Image (tube, rainbow, N blue to C red):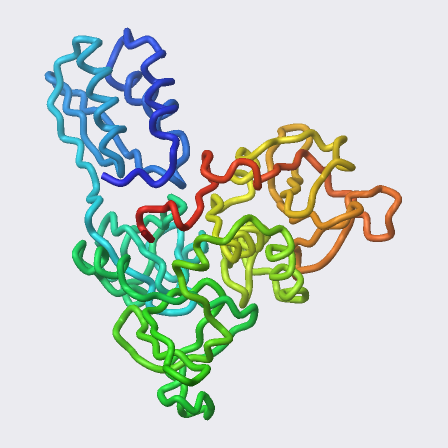
Length: 381
């Protein structure tokens, strides 16, 4: 089973260290949740116990290792129980079929936005909710997506996709796939595409165009200037200037809660989208991103480097509510109302008084918890 993040070994070790002498199964269920599945945004852990004798341990989890740890602790406590815990499938796949697809916190168009998936992104299907799927994205984030935003794929189809000729959209601005090689005409558009979208594709010999196929089988042509070969793109080194250039290209773009494309995005969507442009997958929310990388105190801000992530929030609780991307000389770019520039230097004209809590350096922690190169992610390669 593919484990999306690298928390598994750490969490299991922590759980094993905890005493297993709980008085009843409910205590053990709660303890395993706290140690092995603390973040519902990353792991499904919906488990309860009946008041029967023997107790029935029932519910569901998205990860086999979490269930294994729960059962181990129940056995160690010598509790008699009936195992009725379902592990959600790890071999049901789909890909996003549109340039940006809404993923919500519950099934239904009126539900709050959680994040967005982007075209070609591999998606793990956890549950079919009848018109809606409960899914997991490559960064581990869990939410619900309407079925017509996805195209289901078999494991064999996904394996073939990982070996196929693929291209990724690298243009900073929304562009188009056209039915014909002329690449023009309002009635000639197959689909819009945005930065980070992945397509099957081969360059047309002798021309600056590439023939592409979308995840749902639609075919067309795109300017070769707007794309790169996925394999070559995924091997790129860390480049803070590339991250910042994409961010600045979005200046003025409206803030959109849960947004994760260059069309509209929230604060953590900006950092996530810009880092993905550099071939790096970050965790989804600002509060998650703040726990990754090398973490520094706010008073050290003069030591910030381009590409560092700045975190803001409540100084009393330590709760992170906002993230920005650092540039130079105290300046940063972020999404707040719109994508814009401000400063953490109290003497600067663009200074904002929002409490600055910490900053994280990502570049030295790629491959660590919550920071994954696309080239190293088994869903892509």
